[in-house]
Length: 184
Image 1 (cartoon, rainbow, N blue to C red):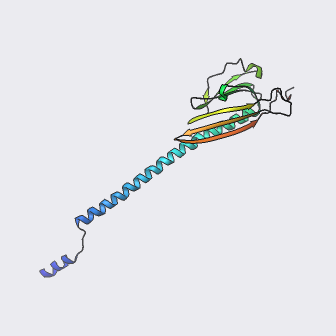
Image 2: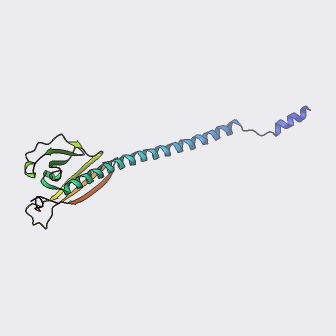
Image 3: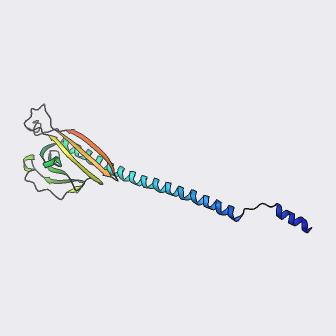
């Protein structure tokens, strides 16, 4: 019976230590490669999410300013077109929007007419955007124009996040109530 048991042991197949080490090495290479790919995918997702949040905030700011500009008169456009001051007829207040320090800022002051905006003291500015935002305002005034000509403000904005640049632009026709004699 002994010879038979030895013969059975010889027929059993098993992995050698070298085969196990080679298999583990290949497994580790596959896992390491997969980890690098997943890490890059998660980084790209985080960058895209940050850019999308900055775009959403910028679109909110553009929509808010567009709504306000429609019912306002342009009082002043700053040097370099990086700021604009308007008098909002619907809320009787002066508003100043300014691109500074890579942020779009809004400040306000109560006023009785657009003539008092120039001498108004504005409150502390509040940030309307996140990320790095730059831009300018291009204003065509309604002042002195016939009633058929309405002023227009174009908002040009560039959002920079993680070496990606997104440009937004919106033009708003003014319902310049003071110029078009709607208030009288």
